[in-house]
Length: 493
Image (cartoon, rainbow, N blue to C red):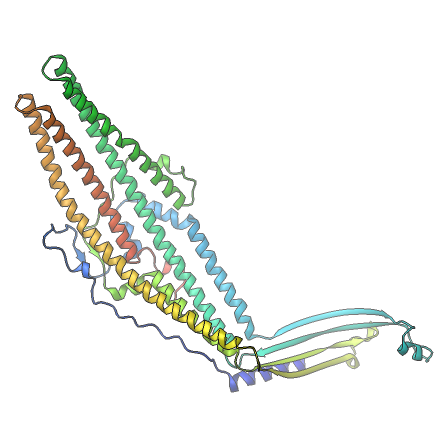
């Protein structure tokens, strides 16, 4: 035990007197950012303005789906957070990273092994050594040896190789936390997009069924007029073709509905058909809020988990340069043994049975064929890659927001025009039916008016769906869908 205390005292002295960390220290990357998002402040003057203004102050992006005021969507997101398998994998990776840091941090402490043993030995009498002594008084051909003790070794982290490795492992933990947050952002966006597509397809199906009923009524009326000799068979054939064309859209919409339900079921960790009964009835399409808080580009770097993860990867790569650099310097270690040895068990713990040894050691690589310096160059190159990846991630995040902003704004402008087209086409259908019944226009004009109304109503329904999905994409681009309480851990910037 005295030897072990001596090892600890010597090691602590070495660390205090000579301890340092070689390699570069991590510095937070300073990437230039624009003052505002371009698409949040400009709109094409030649196109209709959107009805939903974009505001600069950022709002509660952590729970953006609540802005749709849809209880079903709120419930789906809650269940997804609890049961999604991608989140479960990401959470397990955080635990793995934390355990890995524990493995690395063990290099700070000495290795101590306790041993107990017993050996019974029978000596050969046919060797030169035993042949000469076998006749001596007291010679024993068979002997016992009882032994108990421990040995310890401690490599002192003088140049900070272990400290840098722990630093890198800590950055990996923080990166895995950001990866889980990124998975959460993606999950919330996928839930929102699939749900909007489901409700949008259901709305299109209702419009199709309504138009199909109207067209079938018109077909019945046309057949009556044909039997009365008031119209030609050509008008009947054209109307029947219109009916069949409209009916052909229904299977596609029904497929979209079922596939969206399957997707939502899997996202909450259930079998594909788990939500069919719950979501098959038609529900309202989630509508965009009255205003859209975007915030500033500087806030984007704090919100986007992929940017934060890239920053932690850069910190880990920087620390690993120090790990590689530490191999250039000598390694200091202390080793020691303490125990008892005795030929008789009852004397094993006598003071005369004690033995111990202690000694410092130093090793310094003299020739490694350039391996160490090559490894340092490898780590430097990896740091350069990590920095480039970080900068590229920042640029991609800015592009995602700008693309989502312009898509959201211009689709709203398109929707305004489509709404006007629907109103005009409805008026056109009413007028064409009146004129046809008076015999002032041919039936083809009625068909054209009905076809135009159906197409404009369908386009408006699709546009409403696109507006909401574009809004979901914008929330995802802004990094919405997580907060500090969502994972219980705070990552460094």
